[in-house]
Figure (cartoon, rainbow, N blue to C red):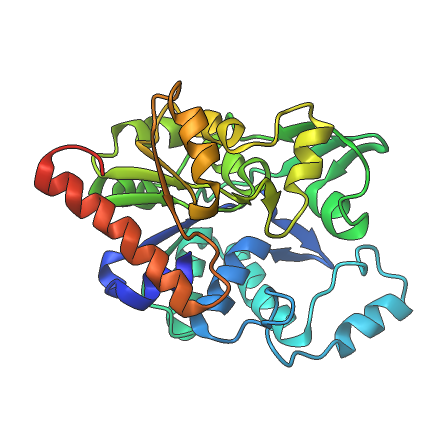
Length: 305
């Protein structure tokens, strides 16, 4: 989604708010997987075969860490990746905020839209699993999302606050899009940060959530398994219910039109169907244009969609 909007919206008009619940420390370095994936994607250096990390990156440093049995060496961090983590950790130690460091890094990578961590404070997602309480990366990467999940905990999120930059971006936006990321692992950790739900409620622009499901399946990731573990339904209507308090429009794939018609009857949200599979930049840009048209229609007619 970020790539789609970046391709058609002027950089000064685009803000991308990113989850920090996945952030963790490895080998004394502060690692921000979601921020870095968006950064690498927008700068054109992402490894497209795995959709994260830098392309053509080596692992010589990691191989040494593994030889030394360094804790956390199961987390794949490439050599170029480690350079970014070294810089971030150094700047944070000097007293810079995560927002300020991300802005510095973004400009040096040639990314000029506002890439905003949802909070400058640590808000780690913890997984209460069948094998015990795990940090998110332990469950997701080391254990390959295998252990059954009993509960998700958003540590310190009740104390952490969204940044002023995030609040201002939401207040100024003509459209706020909740991307088709995993609602429980990428979106909910941001909603649990202090001030986020309130800021979304008061955001004047059209608020649109894009379903992560097509034909009842997630395009990638453990969403359906996770919802099964938690005893939550895994349909579009179940996803929509998460966002119903503050979203105006819920977008499903045009192949799920019948599903949309069934649950929209008892749903307070406007439900709209369009192609939401975005395997490449042109398809992502097409979806972004369609969503912007929704916002434009509301400004013209005074109603959503």
